[in-house]
Length: 563
Image 1: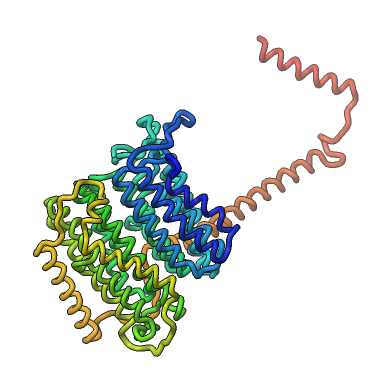
Image 2: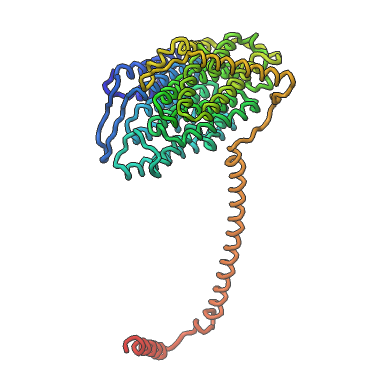
């Protein structure tokens, strides 16, 4: 243990050794770094380190409390799982960028001040884009550019909010901020971009499916959950987050039914699950915040597991299009089992971690006293059970057999999936482990008859609805299509508007140049008529006449200005 060292720094410094290693040595390095970071986290315990004054600002590089500890714990676990999953990759750029990205997210969780948070916040944006560009396709390059613009915009907005917040309060402490000023609004907007608030969300569905097989898994675990942590730290009990979370939980369900790319399906599903967490932050009670932290913990596990399963399918078959898959249970039975475990966990079935965390948030919503919120979460839970719990495994491993026969996923991929699947079950069977990590003292029992009955009923009706829709051919056809979302505004609409404005500017500029050329021509003509060869202003005059003219002008000046 290094006294006071931010655990995220271990991953960042370790990344500098990646280009100097290869083969088994690099694999050992990659595996050891997340373990060291986790060991550093628990060796330090709770407290604050790295306090000093910089340009009159109070900096706290490392602050560990119960809220940051649960997020730091799952970030270390996700880092280890992501590293194991990507051991077969030989791309130095991917390993280097992934370690700095994961370390930056981990470092941001333990930042005790807004300046330290901003530094790590921007570092996550700059390094994560390389996991998208590593696909080395034209689509990935363009998606990465859009992703980077949006992520940097989040950072710039955060910096503006921090500056105004310091002017208002004289403090840069990363604690409760609230919406009492413009500074709070800017900080909330910055967090909202990374948390995929409505109309700010499309960067995820645009970029994640274009990343590499391993890059998507790593991206899915950190950026958005870092934003949830930041919201829970700075805006607990901010009620405007409740309707924002409601929209987030519901609207993606429309798209997941229509989308053909299964990694994009999971990205929309991720957006919906973030809505649960945002609602929990908005409610702001101890149970709600415990549920939010627990759900972020479990969500990273089952969403990473599902992305890993789809990544393995993509790695072996070259596609994750529902219209091109089917019958893979024959070729990839182990991956299928892990996918079903992830599907059960995201569906919130008893004996899975998803059941525990979702029950906590729904109970908090019920206790809050607005029944509509509880009903919305119930609907969203049924919806996610349909698309991620049923659609993803069904169209991939069952459904119409397309005759695809491939090898099972590589061992390191299966090992990573196995660890995530085990933790999904373990946290459901033994929720005391999860409760030992939450920020407030837990007084909650998820395994009541009402919670279990509700979960089973949702499952049965979701399966029944899916079967009936498939049986009577009402379920939307799984076929290649372009599904329009809000990103059309800036990918097409704003692009067309910008080009039209550019053309208008060219027309106006041409008119201005024409007028200027005409005026300049007129001046030249007048000059030529008065100053040309033999013209009045070009004639020479005698010295006497010139002196007489100067004296006359001087006389006029004296008479009129010195009377």
